Length: 97
Image (cartoon, rainbow, N blue to C red; front, top):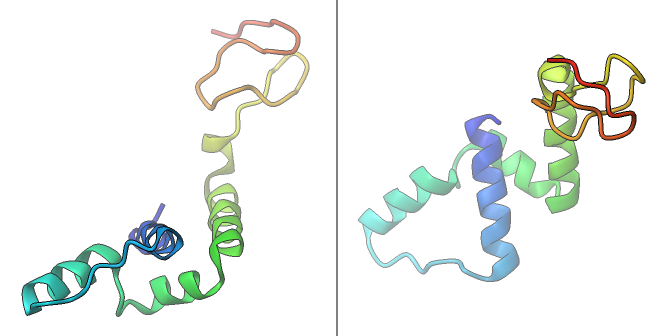
């Protein structure tokens, strides 16, 4: 994920769980900005989509940009393997080491 996407996910978790920290000093504000990207336009655009749509948008971008690295299909039955590194099919039991 890009840094903006990571910050957007962190921020959505903050608002979801009500864990926003009050800003009492410039140092705290600086750290919050650096960690959560409150002034970053790309991050703000993602957060404004809402949590569900933001997650879908990130997932679609990852699949579009690196589909071959993320998805792993069995060469025997062509079904989706459990993980990108799996070497045994959970459906037909085929091994492809």
